Amino acid sequence: MAQLTIERSRELLSQTTNEPHLLQHALAVSAAMGAMAKHFGKEEGYWQAVGYLHDYDYEQHPEEHLRHTEAPLREAGVDEESIRAILAHGFGELTDTEPKSELEKSLYAVDELTGLISATAKMRPNGISDLTAKSVKKKYKDKAFAAKIDREVIRRGAEMLGMDLSQLIELCIEGMRGHALALGLTGTGG
Image (cartoon, rainbow, N blue to C red):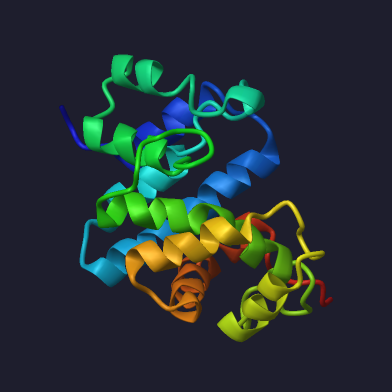
């Protein structure tokens, strides 16, 4: 079974997902996963592909997220490592697949964090271009800001990886910065 590629992830996600904000989220997580792979000395393209596909069933089954993922992805020929990583990103709330590998822990950690980074960047004149971990951490502490984002998952993810929260945020910003235009994170300035 071939390792998942970004092209295959795009093809599979396009079969289940049309909402622009979900496709932007897929790209944000993919970009952050690329930075995480680089950090750990792993295959960037593969980690990006897993990140892109992580919410495969979300648009069609938001109330049963990840319950309609495993079988269809297996039937589509997606490798077991990728499927397990995708299931592990919902650990504790949606699945009992505990993140074990660096890939799984990274996906678990960056999923919610990319949302917080995006929300913070969208409020800034220069968007993500000059965004710092310090600015994101300030918003992380403000529970009223982007209130739907689960800070506990972000904290646990950093802990699982044995990383300082600032380092994790910095890596995600770095990965996402290269996709600022596609992510709508170029800023509010004229």
